Image (cartoon, rainbow, N blue to C red):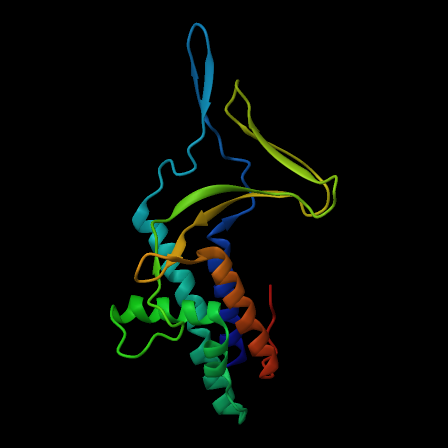
Length: 206
């Protein structure tokens, strides 16, 4: 059973990896030339299939939310009190992911949503994210080579980075933004990882 739990945790981290790509070396812009100018267009969504992007998101949600049932089974087998329901009720990110999962499975909820709203994902898109480190001299910049269209990243300072992320807002039934998809997934995944450890599950976190 422990092997199955570790596999589920690895699946969750793999799913999170699919919505955040740190290797962006192959991203190129399209170079256009005329007699008087050169332009470079970078479209992060070029060739992206909306159905595939939605599939990535729903798979990520499922891999996180189903950890509750696997933890419950572990607790039952080892005689450990199960506190997963309390986690859902007390952690908003965990509750939102739980509601997204149930809505995706059943379309309509027959119970009050655990997050207090009926969350929904907006249309996904890829975005280039630049993050500067915490020190005052940290910086990160992105430019496009006008000759090759290659994306060039320059950075300095610990923590400075650039990556491509699948972006989607989570909204309530009225269309009000209640969270960022990637951030919510990361917070929920961390909360379940902590819960596994608190319940005595000796998991190997990547």
